[in-house]
Amino acid sequence: MQRLIINGGKRLCGEIKVQGAKNSALPLLAGCLLAEGKTVLRRCPELTDVFAACRILNELGCKCSFRGGRVVTDSADAAGWRISEELMREMRSSIVFLGAVLGRTGKCELSYPGGCELGPRPIDMHLAALKQLGVRMTEEHGRISCSCPRGLKGAVIDLPFPSVGATENVMLAAACASGETLLRNAAREPEIKDLADFLNCCGADIKGAGCSTIRIRGVKKLHGCEYEVMPDRIAAATYMAAAAATGGELGLLGVRCEDVRAVTAVFEEMGAGVYCPEGRIFISCSRPLRAVRVIRTMPYPGFPTDAQAVVMAALATAQGSSMIVENIFESRYCHVDELVRMGADIKVSGRTAVIQGVKKLCGASLRAHDLRGGAALAVAALGAEGTSSVGNVHFIDRGYEQIERVLESVGADIRRR
Ligand code: EPZ
Image: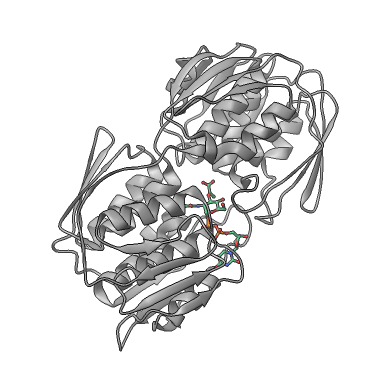
């Protein structure tokens, strides 16, 4: 099992070119199924979750090759409609293939997705919304069989919560449905807008993505296109947290400041200087940082749950007491016990964590339990005194492209063993 060995206390300085967004690349790859012919996705991050999505495409008969950040797909022979349990279990976002496979073939058989490390992650909203588009479902031995006897038909759908995945599934299924779909209380995350832009580039007619109401006029078919995946706002937030934890100064290139406003506002409250010229973010931090009053994770444009753990790692050594309320996932504090091993003073009660800043953290032997929690341990270790080892790096590899090389390039003492 691989681990990261980090000698902490090195100030990070320099520039980082931020990777393409994992959470956009995955639904875009599902969308490639709908686009008849060849599609090229540029700036696709080389991550284990993206490789898993490519394997699902292959299983469905869609050719998929990945070289130098470019994924080329050819869906001409993509007649498959069954996704094996093994591939479904590899990641939670495998569920986003449901809408795409239905849109392509009118039927689909799959099992419940994996990725339950954040607590229960049901898919009831996905299934209920798809039923409204005319999908019939039966379930046996954990396999869900879907068909649309009369084809997919546009509908008015009100989501009970602005679920990112359910919004993506509806967009994918409705893109080639007959008639118009009105999706209300849709998620507004930038990745939703990226998926709509991609599908529109393939000939879809989707308006309003990024707002709560999305209108999708079904078209007969989609064609291939060339498209660049949006920048990863959570990787950007993670590198900002690493700058904060080490009192460093980083320039993040190829990012969109408007996507991370809720995060930069928190770093500014902590006393960091943040400057955002077009396509870049400069963050400069001098220690000690200040505590923040309260951070509540919320759907976009609120503070992202995916940045909660890495920001907590920086707050662990801020002066004063900070509070975090995790509103999106029930169990997203697995990193806390590991931070406490390093000397952090953090108490969790239900969805609330109270972080009493300490003077310093000390290197320790740590273990990642999930993707963002694992990144938080790396952030804490970079700012800590002494050597840390972070085990279960495979969680971190799901979302960060060559994290040790990126951090090393800006002065971290980090290696993979
Ligand atoms: C997406 O997950 C992201 N994943 C997550 O990123 C992110 O944390 C999350 O959105 C929230 O921003 C991808 O984009 C691949 P949701 P998703 O449906 O779509 C409940 C990361 O670290 N819910 O918006 O699964 C659910 O349990 C990750 O990169 C239902 O109850 O998130 C959760 O509490 C992890 N029923 C809440 O809604 C449903 O049918 C938000 O989930 C669907 C969701």
